[in-house]
Length: 480
Ligand code: NAD
Image: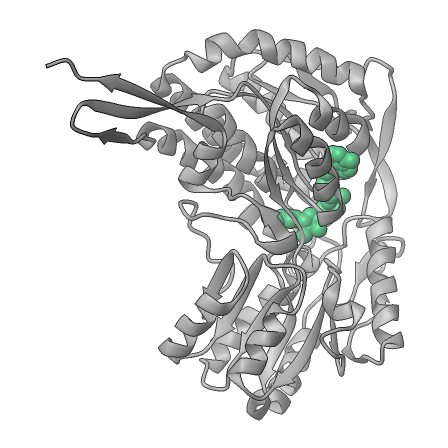
């Protein structure tokens, strides 16, 4: 497979220092390609290119920007197979999942913002002697920094609104999963996106993301990743008064009441626990179950989990593929060891898996743990793997207190047919996203993001277009 190149000023270029990082296929644990280990010099090149492109792109008509975004969406759809192969190879996720979710969603991101920008409007405030109206102007050069769990999906979720709003972008994909970002750069070139509007600089976090965050020419940073790195970005960006949008970690509760639609809940809970090997920020990792249902739920959930197939991501019938990297694999296994030390009982899983022919890949059996209290590390720290805990509760008050007892606040899922209870929890849970009797049911028009240590700001819909523009009030006095 060809080595990856940076995409700067419409060209595919090697990193100036000629340094590369090995890319590892997590399904086999072996290297298969290389990604540039760029540094500040490559970032400077990208900044020069973006600076040059801004004037024309920001004054391009909305219709033309929209047409280009639609064209990129078309090309993503036409290249679905190749992109899904690349995503699965890079990340370890089942290919069917990349084909069904990741790549279609990347196309939908471009399509959505191609339309949204044509509907974006500003406000006017009139009084007896004047009218105020709000101009919303693009910011200039913006940086997007994204993670490895939904590589193209989250990469495009930031780029599409940024360029739709007339900004020029320096995008830094995860160094662990850069393939689809590279393929996207080729599609952008083919679509005729003007040079410099999107620049993709590959490399390690501090060497590229860190440089972008600190650079005075970068006006805003849209970041998705861990809370630890988000905090570092905030510390650098805040004194420079840059705009920041931070989408970070989670420890989401999945709260199950005995009056729920049981079969639907069970099926969905299996997905919300283990989809993408549990590596979705929105996965419910703390399952809280009303005591009267607890024993039945535990039996059925364990049985269904044991029926899940873990195996090579290229196989059609696997439910879980490999986790993303050796480092992450070891981290998850270490978290399971900590859970045992804390007194947790492993009801199923808890071990690595070695499928024939893929013995060195990074596979972990879906794991359910019980018997832990809410204060322990296992229930406080993000694991981001196929590991969940289950805990009983007796009252609504107790469930709500448990749900809110972490520093995170990204999302929560609630299972009940009692509408008053649903409303009470929707208001009471400290999170940015609440699902009632559903999970990962996404409407791209809605605000997306977390509270507490899970996030600052919102993405999605008009929120994203607001983030990527600066409001300016213009007041004109009437002369009658
Ligand atoms: P990470 O924070 O390690 O890396 C994310 C990105 O930041 C990568 O591109 C990385 O290279 C870059 N980076 C690392 N150090 C940096 C620095 N000093 N300055 C600037 N950039 C730097 O996260 P990850 O391991 O790639 O992803 C997993 C995390 O992402 C989990 O915590 C998960 O919850 C979170 N996540 C959150 C959401 C959300 O919407 N809230 C979505 C997906 C993933």
